[in-house]
Length: 253
Image (cartoon, rainbow, N blue to C red; front, side):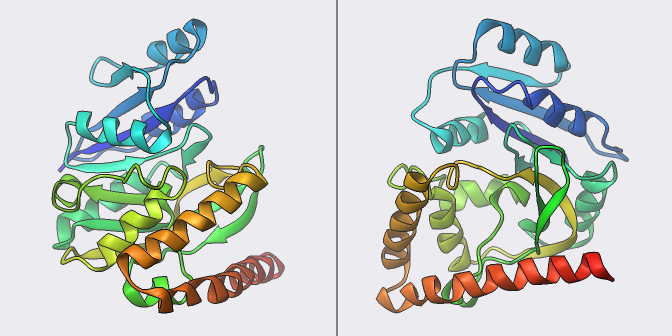
């Protein structure tokens, strides 16, 4: 069982550090390919990305309609069974991460793994810990969200559920996890930090995207469940405060 690490990319040279974090992984009995789905980066950046990849990796450059369209295109190009998607300002947390996740897939009859991530500043200093959460109807109702860029998924899940919906340009991952929560697919939680993610992603990079993202989350909740599940927005801030306080307490002790 091998891994594909998919990175949607556009004019962000920080991707080189993301790629390096993949290349330093310990691989015991499995392989990893890196798939860079590039939306049309400048020539000098594209050249540096290609130079950092090996012959088994893929650099695909074509225009797209946004990050989830790029991810959908990249998924269809991935050649290995297990897919992890990373942002261009993310990195795999430790050299043992993929080996530990691989062991989970090998020993358990599962279709996906949800891992914990760290939100960090620009220098990779942890700001907030996001503990692994499984996509379930109960968790969605109570405002708990799943870290997309810490999600390891078997190809058969994407084949069965479909890819990310273009209806939700900012929050298509939330809609996907709603569909996954109602499905037959089984997963496991991985509590060690698997991915370091810098603050300021697609859904939270500005106030406009935060408003747009929450509007799309509302639509996804109604499409997948019913109006009762809008209670998600009451409980969601409580979970975030809880995670923040636990991270602060962990530093004290």
